[in-house]
Amino acid sequence: MSTIPTPGQTIGPFFGYALPYEGDADLVPPGSPGSIRLHGWVYDGAGNPIPDALLEIWQTDAEGNVPQAEGSLHRDGWTFTGWGRADTDLNGHYSFSTVLPGATAEGAAPFFALTVFARGLLDKLQTRIYLPEHPANAGDPLLVSLSEDERATLVATADATGLRFDVHLQGDRETTFLNYG
Amino acid sequence: MTAPTKKPPVETQADLSAEIAKIEADSEGRNVRQPLLDYPPYRSSILRHPTKDPRHADPETIELWAPCFGHSDVDPLEADLTIAGSNEPIGERITVSGRVLDGEGRPVRDQLVEIWQANSAGRYIHKHEQHPAPLDPNFTGVGRCITDSEGRYRFQTIKPGPYPWGNHINAWRPAHIHFSLFGRAFTQRLITQMYFPSDPLFALDPIYQSITSQKDRDALVATYDHDLTIPEYSMGYSWDIVLTGPSRTWTEPEEGDL
Ligand SMILES: [Fe+3]
Image (tube, rainbow over the protein chains, first blue to last red):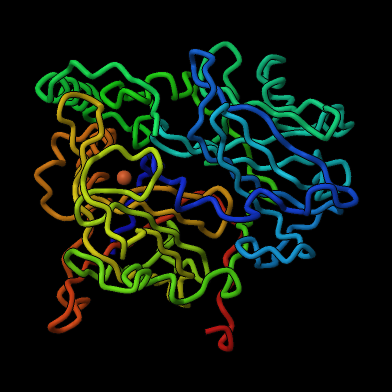
């Protein structure tokens, strides 16, 4: 039995008819009480938007519980599964409808866990989206380990409908990506 | 249909093969993350790889759990890619099956597996696909299933064809099936490609060669498995997947769970 970890490979250009599905990005119905939009743009190293990226978020519910309900692929509009998927459009824009994640423990900084795939990106990238001006950010072990510039790449900004978070795969504002090994 | 106009590639396969060989020689004996993300022979990766090393994070609660999928998410018929049309798709019928395991060899049970692939002529059903090979009205090339109590998945499909992709002059991808997998934790998420044994295009392909060690590349190649054939009907390939990354403490399944 092989125990060599299976290497990743790029998602390629042709996932668009296979992985996206109806309701994939709507963890809660858009506009429902407590819902927010989490959205942004994905850029390459030249600052051009990436129209063939796929983002997935995984998060606690508003009370900080880890969801363990199935139903992400056939959403019933009532069950919070904590997981969603959004592909970028021709402008490199993605958008989720969800709720703010709650803290899993007293004093812990809540965040969205994020996975990024794209044509041209040979393996997944993972990181966190923290909430702007959350008091617990100041004591978060990851955030305090980063420089101010790096930290800024991991904190969303508030806008009229919720949160904006851009992903830069490369360049001056390159997003800080994580490994958990 | 209009597609973005791209400059035609000028590099030949010989140019690319020389780049591939040089990078492999340079990385020999070095223990590097596989695949390389900075791999210029795959031209689209040049502006799409991070230049900084990833930062270490101790996984926190949500990252130690995986999203939960189940039988309400996937119809068992979605594992058969040959029944989408009113007739049989054209091509060599195959069963592809194997186990999804974690780094300790334990099964990843009740988890979502998604696949997509070209048809037997090397054509995807996709609006940006430009390869002038025939579409097959009886084949969409998309499948899903949920792993069983042993972590096993099983798809009935047809063998995909190789296809040209414009990375350099006359660049062809080896035949492959795209696989999307969720492990026992967020950290184990994987999207990869499964290849077929002894493909003559392996040496020429920058995506496959972005994994610079042969033993790691071999982990993406299925094995012909006569036990998976259906007598007088179809061929069979087996391929196991190992997902690594920290997860929460393993609990032995209860008798009643199995
Ligand atoms: Fe492909």
